[in-house]
Structure formats: structure tokens, C-alpha cells
Length: 401
Image (tube, rainbow, N blue to C red; front, top):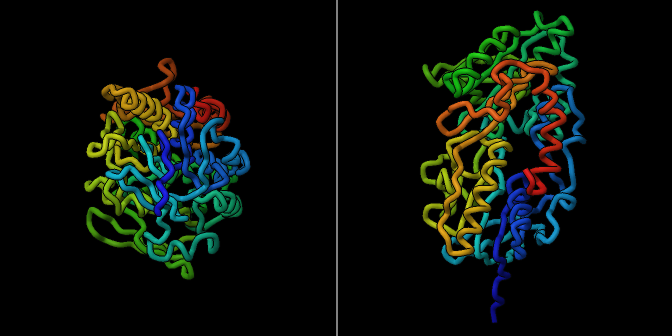
């Protein structure tokens, strides 16, 4: 005799920024039967990792336990999802459990594909190779930067959507600013490899970052990416996607960002967007509902939306998901809309930052109408270092901001 799957009115997959924010907002709205599927016992505020790698913040400032952040009244299931059947409305876990849901919120984040660049996984953590996309390596990035006096520093970004698209550039600027202050910048060749044809998709910020790179003497390779790495030889192959030409760069320091994609169980499942090579979840760009399965919502890094994958985007997506999910539970149509808002704090020096805020149409969408955030500002840096973490832990994750 088979056992019926455990059923929950709302099942949330993922206990990161998006999952906890939605759970907190649903609890505040009076929903009582919420289960959150998340295997990790630690929770990281990842936007600080760039500052950790740049020597401007301690790693511990970005760490909390998952238990202290799960909203009261939410059932925490400490397991990993391995499959979803949107027709049967079930999610399978790594232990073989089958969970049934009335509404499903997908927020498991994305997968860092360290094997996506041949040689990268084996080279990480030694031989001058680091990445702020791993918390254990962010302090190593700072060690490499502060010890460097001469040679070649290489900073790379992969093609395809990545979380916090400005992070691959920010660490290059922080490193160059530190070397300038130490009087060694002239002895260091700095190369920044970017897959896009411009420094940034929004022209006003692209112009500002072009000037930042020029100021530091950074060699920028546009429409290019690292396609192979020989850690033993300290050599990286850079491919220009415009011409197809390859260049071998010998480095002393390499900060690499891995290709990123959806978790395999979603990428290979029925909810993936066929138009997304990385397998991200299909979602209406305004309502955040799955077009084929309206009881399913997706937000955060895993959603196939034409906007940057940032925590600021989640802050605007979560209220839309909650409003439309509640409308569905009450038999009403989904009327809340997300306009594509996202924000990318672009640190350009110690205590200097641009704040890029924009929507789906790449139109600037400033939150501070009386401040020109297209220019480097010290107050914006303090906002990132001290203000935004407080907003995150005490506002967003409590369902208040």
C-alpha cells in the first residue's frame, strides 16, 4: 500500500534570497501552510563577496545560519530537490520523498559550472587563480591582490547570464585602485575580458565604466571570453567571438568567473524555457507565472527573465509573486506586474561606487531621484557596504522591504 505524498498549500524550493523573502511575505499575508525545501544550513549574503575579495569587508559579515532566517511558522525541509512533475503537482527530493503542492515557487538559484571552462576547476585556489564566486576563495583573492607587485593580472567573465553581472568588473577596479595607492599599478598589466560588445548594457553606465578602465590603464577585451586554462603553465586562452581569433595570456593573477546554468533537474525537466541554453525556468516576464503551468512561479537567478540576476531584482520580484500567488488561491486573476527592475552597485574604487538601476527596456530607474548615481559617489559605497546588508537581513528577509 503506497503512502500519499505530503501536501503543502505552498511549496518553496530554495532558501536563498528569493525563497526566504517570498516565505516571509506569504506568512505576513496570513498563509499558514508553507514548506521550504533547502539543504544548506548556512546562508550567504553574496553581494559582500566582492568587497571581501577587495579587502574591504570580512567574510563573516556575509554569513548567517539558515535556521535564524527561516520565517516563524514556515516548515523547513532540509533536503535537496531532484525533480518536479507540474502535471501531478509534485516535487521529488534526494531522499526519495515526494511532496505535493497547491502552489510551487521555484527559487533554487543557479549552478556554478566550474567545469564549463576546461582547466578552471583544477586550477582554482592555487597558482594565482581565484574567484569571488566561492566564499572560501574570496579571502584568497585579497591575498593575491595585496601581495602582487608586478606581472599580469587577468579578470574574466563568461558568456551567458551570470549572477551580479557587474562583479567580474568590480574586483578588477578594486585591485587596480589598491595597486595605484601602493604605487605599483605601473608595473602590473591588467586585462579585463568581457563577453558583451560594450562595458555595460545601459549606455550611460557603459561610458562611465569605459572611463574607469581607461583611468587605471586596464586593457579591455570586449566580445571575448576565456575558453581554456592551463593552471600549471599559468596560461589562459582568450577567444574573440567577433573574429574567432584566440590569444594566449600568461598571468600571475587570474580572477575567473565560471559559466552558470540552472540546476540540472530543472534544466532537463518540463519547466525549462526552450529558449534558454542554460535551462532556466520559463516564466512570464511580468506575472512571473509559468505560462504552461499557472500554479508554478519562478523568481531570482533561476528564472529565464531578460534582466540582470541580482538581489535587487528579487526585492521587486517577490511582491509580484506573492500578490499573484495569493490571487490564484482566492480564485482571482494575476494582476501584479514586474517591470524588469534590477540594480547593480558598481564599485570602481575604495569608497567609490556607481549605482546602476534600470528596467527591461534598459531605461535608468533611479531609487534616489535627487542623487546622480551615474557618477562615482562615496555615499553609494557606504550604502553597499553597510546599508544594503542591513536592508537585506532586517528588511527583505523579514518580508518588510
